[in-house]
Image (cartoon, rainbow, N blue to C red; front, side, top):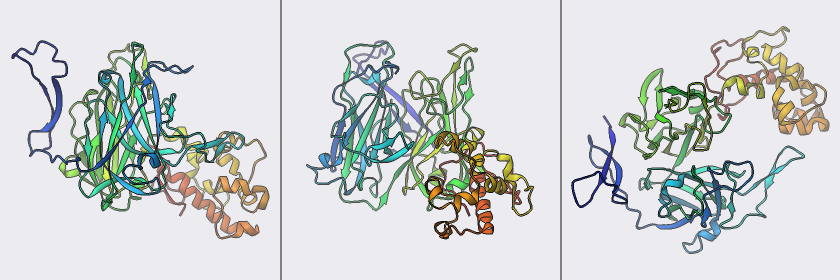
Length: 502
């Protein structure tokens, strides 16, 4: 069995360990049941340091928690590559990374994350949508002082570090791709200053090791967003020694989208101070294969990435993954709650893994199905119900065909701000210029070219309505009548999975 444990060490002038040892102490992980791990040498590779420019570790913006600063900094790939010899258009590989921590600031640093970004995705408030990239206000070393949420346009996470973690290096044939037109690297630093210590500044960051000699395999970082942002997950009840968040399931419908088997290099667990245990369990062909990482107790101060257990180094398309976090909330009253959120004084469940080869789907996100289903279909009962009019295959297709606005209730009322009359499916698909913007925003009409000529037949549109229902219901684990193979709603809404209509 793989059983990595933490070794705590300290040294001094005597055998008495009652005194504080200052910097003459530390910890590391070791698997005492196996051979020593292979340590990869990064000295031969070029590197760049991405560092904060002496930022204050107290938040000064209005309406934000001053004890929990989230600060971002932009780094221009064209600037970074001048000495090494690459541009933002080039593809290069990150082969390893390590934290660079300002002396004396360890107590204030919660985590750092590093993203690649195309640019700043500007938002058109009048249209209610993102309208394109606008880099006019971006520059190398630009600081964003209020950065709880990553800037729009930054969604590709390539590195992360949390308290207790060390350097990371990838196998000699594997690298994380950066560049390729992604001009910006954006680093987010999360600080925690609960006692509001004044006049403390930070220049910490990350050193990334790079090579222009591309390695054969692209790697990626896959995340399980079980409970991260405020409002995503119900609060945890106080006064309990063991309470778990709702499990996030990556269903086989999602993992079958992988291009092939995935090799897992390391597994990381992340919670805050009340976290006690995390696990990502793998189920294959109906059998529980156990957790990817055997962690007997989560420790906030020792968040080291660890190799998966030998039996689960390879994940297969069709595997079912279940991510769960446990917490001890007995330190707060039983009649209170612990909120879920990014700040250190809230709780979080955010495991992840480095793997290869890189896939398009990089994150699984927990959503309670009934909380988000009205964005996809107004009533999940329609999926398994027969039609009232026999010309339709299902009640779902009938509802969509007769009233698109009611079928996509929240999409129309909230996302689109629509206040017009009801629209049926034929009017939308055969509406010509009058409904062109709607068809672009909600691409659910036939793609055979009939919408351009306003000649989609009723039979074709009924077939397409049934197919649209297959997608809407499939997101939540349901098949569509008359197929009653699956009538139980998934525990997690797989809204990020690229399911097809047919």
